[in-house]
Image (tube, rainbow, N blue to C red; front, side):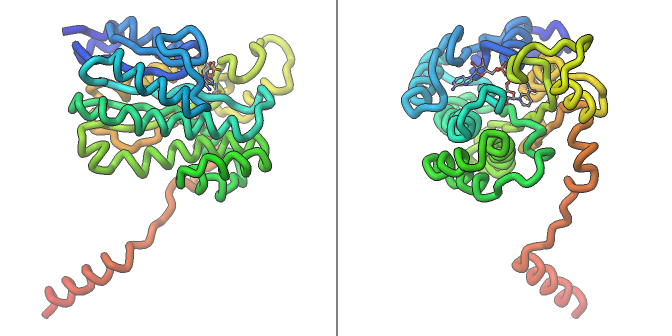
Amino acid sequence: MLTDPISRLPLHANGAIALTGAASGIGAATAARLNAAGHRVITVDLHDADVVCDLATEAGRRLAIEKVTELAGDALAGLVTCAGVDTSRNLPGSRVVSINYFGTVALLDGLRPALARRGDAAVVCVGSSSATVIPDLPVELLQLCLAGDESRAGELADATGSALAYGASKAAVALYVRHSAVKPEWIGAGIRMNAVAPGFIETPLLGKPRDASQSDPVLETFLEATPAGRLGKPDEVAALIAFLLGPEARFFCGSVVFADGGLDAKFRADHWLAVWNRPARLVHRQVGSLRRGAA
Ligand code: NAI
């Protein structure tokens, strides 16, 4: 049995783990960590990967699903959807939602059969703390994403701009995970699906390398916002992803776990607890049984 050199936990001795966005940043740190632990990692990216493709396009997504399924052999033990872009490269909002949300969901849906064949697979989606800390996210854009309407979501994302499109795309990923993870075709098929929500992490996604010893207004904004007073390291997120893939996380299902140096807790301390009202159907049933009990 293979052993993780870090946690000393037994790992799946067979079965590959597919990882998108593996060529850089958090994805590269995750690939290194999984490889070091003895996993077979199938990498997917625009460059420097086993499967080179553009997840913003239908053809790229189809290629990724076909090649990963082929390379995985019989079954896929895990999937990490990490490929993503933010707003630092002045991309149109439509490209941001196409990569971050629609590219992610296409792979989740397309690779679900291979994951289900495994019987005890795990999925980790990389979201972002921007899903909760960016104010005034365009709800209609979120809804269009969740409804699978890529063309109208793209139009609206172009109109709202890439910053709000980024937050909305990541909120949609988190909601997709929470809605889908509990369904029969996911957890019922033995596939645990969860998400991580990183805060500011020192990777090329944040733009040019940021040197904490020099004055940099963007870096200062990030540091000021983050209670931990520093940027996160890619391997700190990779460690969380590896944990969620592994056997110690087998009771996690539909969780969105923040690794953000305190950002979400700072900005949304009380907001995560939304008091929910019991659906009318349940209230009636409960009142009925109370009445019967009282009689
Ligand atoms: P990165 O820029 O270092 O890596 C992203 C990877 O995704 C790259 O290798 C890139 O080639 C790949 N990629 C981009 N577009 C693609 C496409 N169309 N098709 C296939 N691959 C594509 O960025 P980082 O920081 O490692 O980001 C990884 C994930 O973490 C992203 O989903 C990002 O949104 C998320 N994230 C990053 C944060 C940060 O502060 N760095 C904060 C919160 C979330």
